[in-house]
Length: 246
Figure 1 (tube, rainbow, N blue to C red):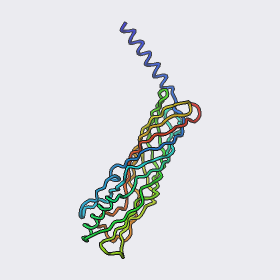
Figure 2 (figure 1 turned 180 degrees about the vertical axis):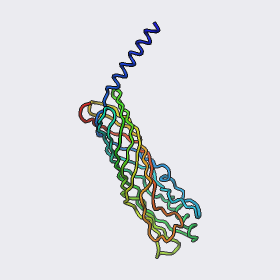
Figure 3 (figure 1 turned 90 degrees about the vertical axis):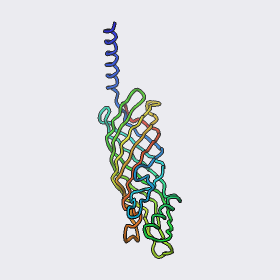
Figure 4 (figure 1 turned 180 degrees about the horizontal axis):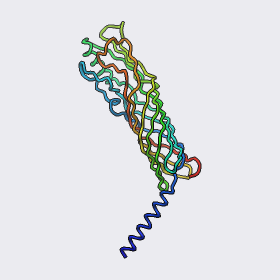
């Protein structure tokens, strides 16, 4: 009896694995939206201390991302994936402006600094790379690693007036620079019909940073960002459309 049980279990396992191995991932295109949470230096709000200023703190906020993605499979489970999405991570708050003002007051040894801010972090991100997909009945598990370009559309802008000196304003300008970035993630696709499904994803993005220009700075006293590192996690949901036959 024990031998028969082992035989039937092994047979069932082989049949299941054969069926699984024959499953082929479908080419698809999807549209998604979700929450984008900054991490690392990008999320930090510390300005540092006298002669040890933190020039990488981004003061970024939890924002949103939305875009389009897709994959073409040249092997049953291995394909080329791509994504194009917009992301926004807010700007400097009133509390941030007050904290930054204190840091410039300390750095330049003045009695008061007035900080004015505007704008937000917004970017277009284009990524391409390999994707492994594992179809299991109506469910498909995706894992991928992508590389590409982050194109900044804007970054927060800041002007600093030291005491009553209106002739010279220190300025951090909004950036429209681009830089290399990479992204890794995983997701689930659930087929509601042969062509339409739901998509759930989590992706981690990282870039060494985009260049930031400053005006009227003869030294680096106080916080002066010249390159802003960026990293975040996107958690998104969306609709996916299968293309062609499996």
